[in-house]
Length: 283
Image (tube, rainbow, N blue to C red; front, side):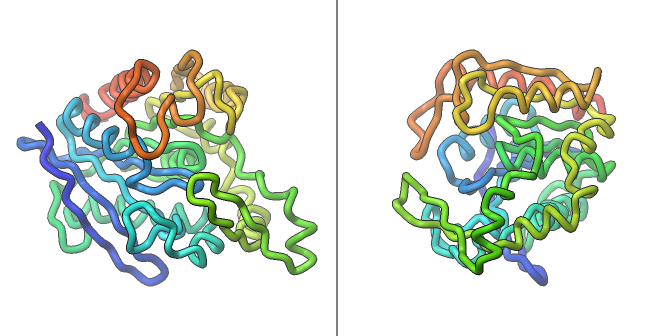
């Protein structure tokens, strides 16, 4: 049975990260799993707390779920109270944030919270967070297993706004759940253009040398199933494509979490199978 979640906060130059960690009662030293949310997501959105707890129980490992600094959720639990940070978020910044979490796990300390030190980690990222996890997994040997849910296959998703940004406008994305207009500054596009090689998701997938589970619903309304096929093809024999029949972008879940369902449980089972391959044998 998992213990938690326990809250932590890490403040470093350029980022303040809030998160939760689930630590099983007899968690072994050496391995952990990190869960990353996507665009307009946050650690307490919908299924993330349940998913994190389930992974901790089924794997018997600590599981960390955190808010990226630019998530837009700062001091509230599930309200976007820092739209300025959201507007300036970039893929490069998310890679930095994830690096901070992995460094903390390696040292056995997340802010003021002591955790079992680990030298190998599994990553699970949803949607945009999946791309961040792929990029990090390709560059950090501490990562021994990777799972993506409904991941994008390219960061090149903002070119359609370039004319408005060039005209000095701030683009706004409507959040249907909260009714907020969420601003986006052009630095996300500048980041993609300036760091194209570093942010090549398919190139990173091709460079992976760890078990990679590509979990995707074939009724995803936000990220087409073709993205999952592209990721699996790029990664080659190390990847396993898990097609979740009839599942949308949230694997049948929304916010607030309304309880598990068959599609969602299939996604968890697929994820656990990949993590066991990469983490239980020591990677």
